[in-house]
Image (cartoon, rainbow, N blue to C red; front, side, top):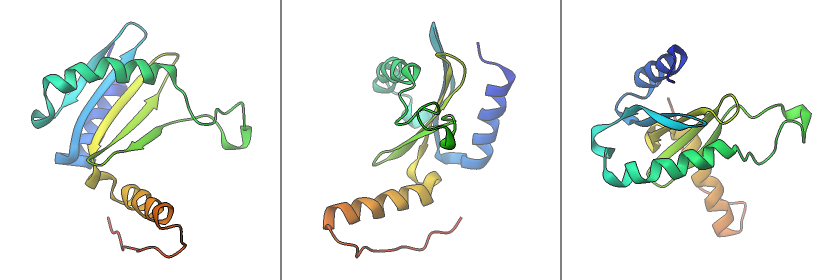
Length: 135
């Protein structure tokens, strides 16, 4: 069930990301609920993809769990950077959490860092282009 904290997170993302805020879904053990879907991404394809994404999110498969390397601590969020957007996963209690997607421009510094790292990997050299990114 969507709680006040989920509504507060939605409001925070609305204020911070503005028009770059694509979607937000709260999920729990028995299903999921929509917090926000921007009109231009409200498609049948999105509706079909959410259950699969939610099931993967429920599994909370972090690269490294807190108990495996305690100095790093527990996972508080994970991020995927895609060509046209960014997905942030906020795991909560067992099999509960929130998935938020934003346009890439809302995560400009992270996306720029990822692009530069990919450039390094693709060119096999330490020479890469740097771009100044400002808030």
